Image (cartoon, rainbow, N blue to C red; front, top):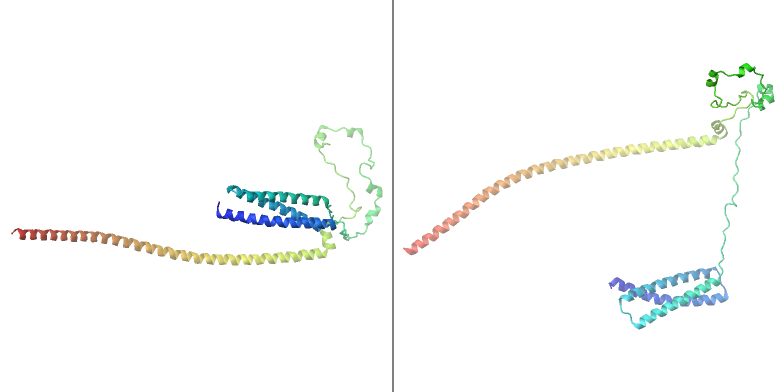
Length: 299
């Protein structure tokens, strides 16, 4: 078991004992208050107590789960069993009190019926004076459709249609055209644009103000975008100059490194040959010295 699990086990064990004692005191106090007076606040306290009991059960399960890894003593296991029985007793007492307490549901009065109905103001329509030609027209000619107006009798020869007439006018495909009424019989209907323009001057004024404000905002945004583009172009120019300078420096460094590399290679060859010559001369001198010493001793 790690250090964190041991610390968690100790915390849960200590919190479990304190929580069970506190729950016993609160449930006993709630029973005494139930005999005197019970209100909605006490019901809320019952709900809080039930939540605490559930939390105590989770702590008890954690303690038992961590205790399974270790060999618990008999007294500790008996204590956990007594805590479980206490929690069962407290839960049954809280459930009994909650069953006895009637739940009062407060219904909120709706707000929509209290709002007043909106009043729509009718827009004034322009009054057109009656035309002099409309008085001469008979009311029957205006009210009656074209089907009810008697037509003169047609001769029987004209009722027979030729083949060219049947192809030219098909009764199924020809649209039904309503009867045309005289222009002077009905007053002209005002269009929506003329109605808004004549009856609502505030609407046109507001639309003009809104149009001016939007145009000013668009002009301001265009100026800001232009300034941003100029700033970005300047910064890009500066960055390009820096990149070109860095490229020039890198090229110079590369050329210098190539020259130094060639010089080092040449120096390495010369120094190698010189070193071999010095070593060989030292060896030859040593051999000659030993030969001279041996020759002197023999003679």
